[in-house]
Structure formats: structure tokens, C-alpha cells
Image (cartoon, rainbow, N blue to C red; front, side, top):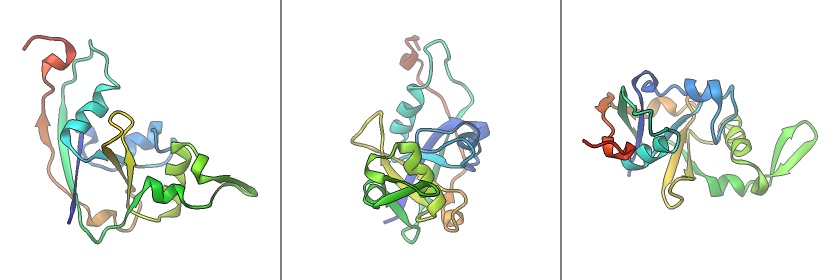
Length: 162
């Protein structure tokens, strides 16, 4: 069955090119490495945004972007990635992937090209999942991205009355 993914972001980041993550890095990538962060539901995407927002910064200009990953596009899981015996960080230096940081794992995943999509546990809701998309992977073009839809945060999430 195809995989349906979501992202709630400012409209300028709706292109899903990984540019923002490339500029500043993220939990699963170092700066300089393009990756697109998505989730398995709109509600999780909202929560992933809220943990980075201040109460006084009521967000405007956001959209929901959804994408469909066809079955033929490869998806790797964090557990599969951690099962790989060694990560070569620098020539002659190895690190067991079991103890690697999430950034080291993500960088390794991006460099290896082992899949277009990586499924990882959300740190906000550990029983749910985030999905990283590698825009440089040969299968990335097979992912179908829908047109962005305007999204308005409920003011009650910021302690404001509606």
C-alpha cells in the first residue's frame, strides 16, 4: 500500500527540496545535507512544529503539504539502519551504528543512498513516526507531492481565545 506523508510548514518551504534542513541541519542531518522531514499524520506534523514555537509567536503563513510514496520506492527504518555493523565516519575510524547519534545515522543514510525514505520514531510522540526524504535519491522523483493547502493553527494552542 502506498505511504501517505504530511508536512506543516511555512509556504516558502512547501517545495520539499530539503533546502532549509541543508542550511541549518536537523535532528537527523548535519548542515550541508538536504533532507525533507515529514510525518505520518497532520496532527503529528503540528506537534513537531509546536515544540519549536514560542507562545508569543503565533504562526501565520503555514501550509499542509501531503505526499504519496508509491510501494516501489524504497523505505528504510531506523532499526534496519542501526543493524548495520559499522559506520565509517572518517578514514580509518569506525563507530557501531547502534551507538551512533541520530545525525550520524541520518548522514550515513543520506551518503549511502540505501533508500529514498527513512522511517524514524518521533521524539515528540515516540509511538508515532517521522519520515525523512532524500531529495538526491534516484527514487525521489517517484514521490507524488500534492499542492500545498493553507493551514491555520488553532489559537487555543497558544493560550489565545478564539
